[in-house]
Length: 590
Image 1 (cartoon, rainbow, N blue to C red):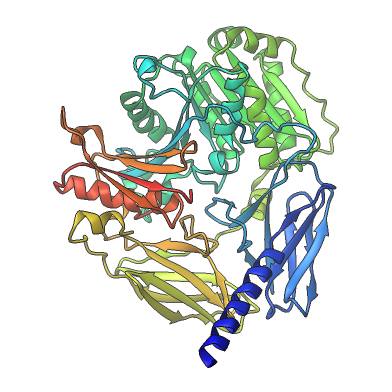
Image 2 (cartoon, rainbow, N blue to C red):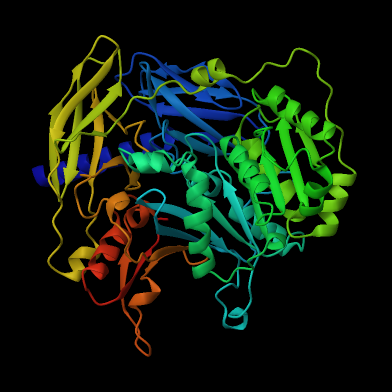
């Protein structure tokens, strides 16, 4: 009797938890408004900060423990948002989509249109594949990473000899290489355009725009080289792409573009290397006006450029400087296509997606590009009210970050989080099934910290254990009972139910930046089949032999394969140490 009562109580409890979880989900309403919900009965004050509406306080329901507010209406699009809980930024725990970034963690809200298709919609068309790659960068003295999009049909037998043009597409300041994929939806935008016959088939490469962050201490000889990103792009990444993909390697078949800092990097590299790139795109950006043999030789420069495309929002904090750069080009006789927006909230990824959708149909199409530049809108006239972009603005928008995790010379690691209103904070380290909780102390600025040492993660004894073994420490902060990921750690592990940050001892053999000049495989994401597959580097394949294939039913999305110390790192190290080649496929939960 008692046992039956306990079972009934357990079922009632489970039903209640499921009901609470469902009612705490953020909801997009039919009228274009959004109802934000967050369950936390202990919080004293909660607000939501969403890009289309700014920050708004939420109302608490004592019966359910749910905080709620309805905002909008807003135009259908994708918007980053987060909750501010007692002064602490929190990702929506019930939202699986998030904004990858070095310095903040936002959830992603997708508002679909009921009046037509959006450029980034996932439609029933042929989908290209997303490939996570690693390559050794001699300029960095470290292993770097990038993402490669290959169009639908690239791997079909019928296309085995077909070569493709390449578009190098760079994200903005503090963004990771994943942002133009996970937030910018570049793959789905291009899939849709190709299916409509509006864009050329092409390979897109997403470099990581801040490679110095991959090493705690960039070697003095590397730092002396100056622009590490440009050196890595031209001398390391591009040769890797051209050696491992079927590319057409001339200026007429190379494009480069980017958003924000990435737009600056794209213009700077494109204009300095017009022998390599003839299609240049800047989204919400500008670049140096002091590039030798470019601006003062307009006829020569124009003859080498198939497309120079510049777009910016009139409400963007970079608008004044971007407009000035357009005017500078006009005065020097440099042709360019220009676009201005006013309704996408300024310096945002709504603009980045819009600009990308506008330019992809022009790439590798000389006639369309020429017409776009010939019939462009004129540069908007200055009003005198434009705000200049300077170091003061830069420091306000991107304040000095809190470094966490920070690795010391004595093999220590320090975790930090700013939570001035918190009463008690711990960092919880999880590795090999063990959970270690460390109490943190608060300084006068409200930053909590603790220093400890991470042991090296040992090589698993067998191959089967290796492929299910993630060679990293997962961790999170417990802030007055709340599960909080490290906002300053760019690496996330996602177990669907909870998200975790990632830490790894830099002395460990799985620490990717220090893995050395070995042969790296790649992880291919196939949205058609909802799989992620690790393929070993070509040097490990033996003619006439099929590598062993291991299939895992994934409980963790793509991060478990690709992020720092993930399955791909373990596999690359095992193969470098002499293991037989194998293929690993993770099904589902991507």
